Image (cartoon, rainbow, N blue to C red; front, side):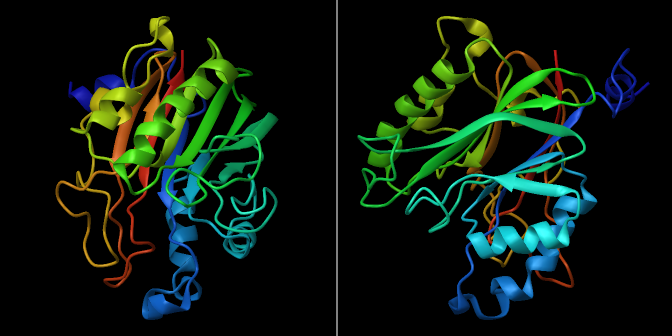
Length: 278
């Protein structure tokens, strides 16, 4: 029996009990992208989410109009989050898109990577970057988990300041509950920032682990997640991640390099992890 078959036939594990978690930087809507501008690829982005049956997706760079487009294109899904410019609708969102028939949001909020994280504020790299989080109840199992979705800055200095705040907030908000963290982290797996994010917590069950490294079946797709609209993942550019704490198993992990007649739905490839709450 193959490794894949053993994992898929594990006692008590069915599709009804697993959750498909996606992280997807959809690239903000800007006319300068020309043939790759959002109006020409919104159907492609929606198709990725629909076809791969994501139960919940952390989106990055999403503007309010793009979120409304996805709601129209994906009946049964809705989203939560706040625009990073004003805490309402202005600017990019690190939104969480989810299936209404599968997940029930219990509480949620957004915080900023700045000296005043609980208000819409300028960050450490002269930009505004946010994390949106939600506590969900899984309608299939009745269990609850926390989802955090983020987009870290381009500079090493920003990430060095942001990661301690991110870890502290996850620890404080979620405590000993299961945690999924998605995002465009603008860092590589061999970086000091990656090591800082995945460093052990005093309570080991809270330690974050990269779904890429702990999947119970062979990984699918390219290793790189940056496409630039031109390639199916640039080798060595894995900057989009799904992390989980030790209260979740990762059954499958894939970097999705689907293209549509040579066109990609974004300048990043989405990443999908199928997980199970322990």
